[in-house]
Length: 154
Image (cartoon, rainbow, N blue to C red; front, side, top):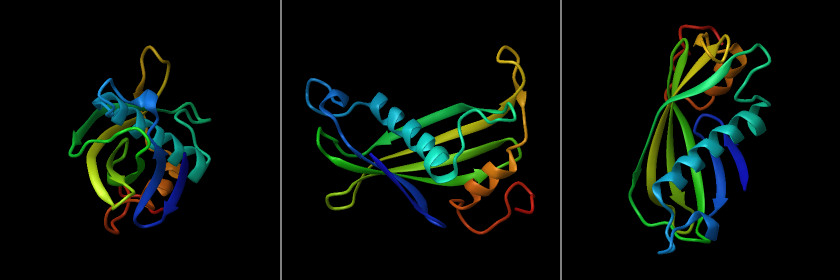
């Protein structure tokens, strides 16, 4: 498992599919792809920017929506690059898109998406919060196009 950054393009999480991540037929199932999306997002936050799912200021990231479209079969020992880009940045939410690429031949095997909200307050009654500036700057590195992030000057 390694992560690399490619500013202006995508954040990549590289992963070798384990036997434990496959079903009885030897292929990865839908839930496994969701786990890889989560790992890619955590690695982006941790390795690339020293951030966490919960900020020192009490903000937390909540996944509001997630999906994945499987295009090709993935088997144990396949080497994947899960490539994350930022599709949209708002004031309190952002969209991430993922491409799952089999590194042998650069074959696109799946596409995914996440809608993430920044929340603060007690766990029993969280409320939307502004995306922290440090996170907004990190996300802007991987945003499509060169538009400003949520009307901010970052």
